[in-house]
Image (cartoon, rainbow, N blue to C red; front, top):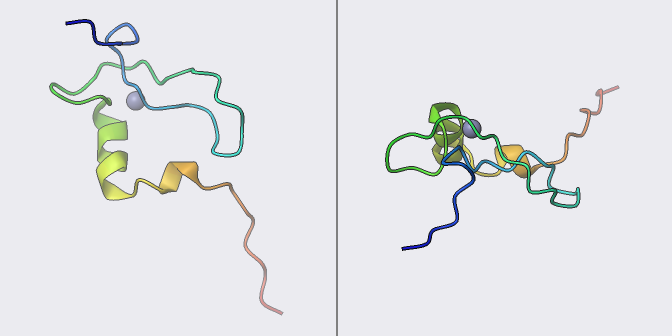
Length: 62
Ligand SMILES: [Zn+2]
């Protein structure tokens, strides 16, 4: 077995959706059997798109 693990840490990508991947990952302690730490695991199941969306300020309704 030769899985690619980043130091056994959380594999949540830290770069933005529109940015060039720099392969920096969260690196926090992973949940057992998961690829993410507790925080990012929760986010990954709650809203996978949340972290990949570019931040756009809301338009203020006139
Ligand atoms: Zn994480």
